[in-house]
Image: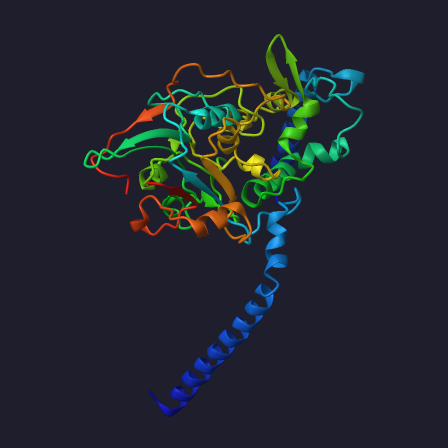
Length: 252
Length: 150
């Protein structure tokens, strides 16, 4: 390296070091009155405000509370989103109630499986048109205006969370447009979340008294879900993939 | 310009005028004796649209498309140009068949609309109360993997 180049290189390094120092200082200032910083998300989003990256919506499912034989979450999902509620090969399932058994130990668990709203979603990675997308607040969605129905995302998803609509649909919920030729999956009931309500499955689970599902902002240290994640051992399904899922399980 | 070219020019103009005259003659006279065919659009509910008619006629696709991206990608739900809002006034239900003013006009203009493949043609209705499940419904899935899910 010539003397001149070396000089430039060192200057650049110094600049970067200074920038990082300043950045750390600014971040410290911003986070010092933490409650104020996070207070915005706790109040919910105004209808005219865009989804903010200061929020990350997530779900915690306590499998020990998830009742055997109950599928209120799946039924509520079907009602809210206008799904058929059937499980045929061509029926959309945004949430599946599962009963799993470890044949070695005999341990049995019940749990709902749905889109895990990954931080690094493989479905978004592979989408050739940009229809599969992640909103700023971490909700993974399909923009049906852009979806060409190639189903690559369905193959990429490790959770089998996505469905394809094969047949023409009628009588959709005006708030949940969905139709033939598009891939779809759990939206965390984005239409409800945007008006500061919890997803239909969480509401149904609480209404039935199971309280197995908790929904909230993972980035708000004062939210119930953040406190629970801090206190209990929770599991990401297929954590080995490094997707950093928004849905976590407790008790499996 | 040569004589031949000038003649050709006049012939073309005459042909054009003749064709126009034919077109006008064949056009069904719409209301008020104006030679302008127009679709028959049912009277929408309400006194007036959210902008004047001329503006809406020309710009409604842009307004809808712009807002759809804001809502879909950014979660902004306060915009005034939503398809759902259009349906509050421009949809009608006759004999159980939902019909919109969009259909009438676009059929007239021979423009295929695929909005209704996904969007509901009706205004939002009150939520139905789900029936209580007395027995396990088909939504249950039983999986017994050899090991744990991880």
